Amino acid sequence: MLQEKVILGSEEWCSFPELGIPTIKARVDSGAKTSALHAINIAPFIKNETNWVRFDINPIQNNLKTVIHCEAPLIDKRIVKSSSGFREQRYVIQTNLKIGDSIWPIEMTLTNRDSMGFRMLLGREAMSGRVLVDPEQQYLLGQPTTDNLKELYKNSEKAATGLRIGVLASNPELYSNKRIMEAGEMRGHEMHFLNIKECYMKLDAQTPEIHYRGGIILNQFDAIIPRIRPSITFYGCALTRQFEALKVYSLNSANAITQSRDKLFSLQLLLNSGIGIPTTGFANSPLDTNDLIKMVGGSPLIVKLLEGTQGKGVVLAETKKAAESVINAFKSVNANILVQEFIKEADGKDLRLFVIDGKVVATIQREAMPGEFRANIHLGGTASIIKPTAEEKRIAIKAAKAMDLKVAGVDIIRSSKGPLLLEVNSSPGLEGIEGATNKDIAGEMIKAIEKNFKHRM
Image 1 (cartoon, rainbow, N blue to C red):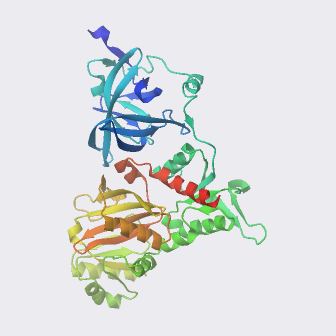
Image 2: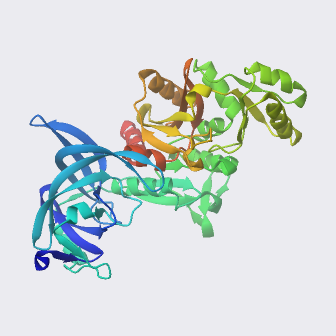
Image 3: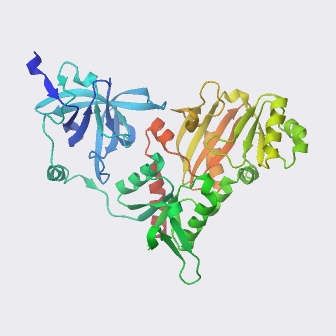
């Protein structure tokens, strides 16, 4: 009986004939219960009165230009919680796995594995009764050469050469920046990572320029995607304005980013557009502390630094005495702060609606850790899929428009008074929302740039 089982190493090449995938490298992991396949642009549909799902895959690691369009029967949807705490709903398909000379049906979940080392994870349920694993070995059933891969995928779709796009940011290893670069390359564009700190400008009426490390002149870019840290907003926006002066399209303009980073000004803009926010107070002098607390409904209340981000510089003052202490402490060091009513019924939850080009493309609910009131993912909060109401979508779209942002992360809290807007982020992170929703948000950002150039033609 043992001789009939297939012996695999820790890494093997396999194929999925029914999906049109001639070969793909898999991580063989008996410690994982279920199998998972890399997939993007996942969309369920009805075929012959049964549930199916279509999706795209880049089957070759580090090759985002080769795309396979797949369809498979949909057999289930499951909530999966990752080791980092993200909860995502995954579609489950069944299809035939071919490995060596053997072929049998397996179940797989579909998920974006761009941040993983393998496009395919083969779990123990798919191997049970059929496979023995020798973890010290690899490719016991052989592996294709580069020429083999080219031949196998010669008829697959290749994205056409497109625009020259720069990602203006600080950290090339950040998930969001990597995903945007990958999404652009996958759609056939020439992508360049431009480190903000290594760019410098020549201000000149006749020949304005932007230079990069070592004197390289950055010219002939079609578009840039600014991803500017709050700590370098001034310089990052100055660079963005310089690109705009050179007639380079910016997905979010410098003016829009600047005003979104000014929390007080942005709240005033939102209120002028008829968007509700938690009652908020702002004062310059500690002498006004008592009336400021009373103004927002008393304690408990939230104290926010105007320059804070990702939940930093946000304090919950549970009593009037604590509120006075926190406010006066901030004021003693000349910090600009807002005080805001605490929405107790939100119970540590808020919504992040991702708006691109006037449409809500994805929504997650963020939930704070036990004992924490801030739901930010960076502070240990968890993300799950949720369907926004029509009013919440309307608010998010209206808020992005009021801030003149093509891309915005709009944070909304559910209160007894209805949905209230907390904040509009001009450089929203992608990891939490892509992980939870399984949507290609980075790809939607690239599509927004493509749409702009189509309109110009």
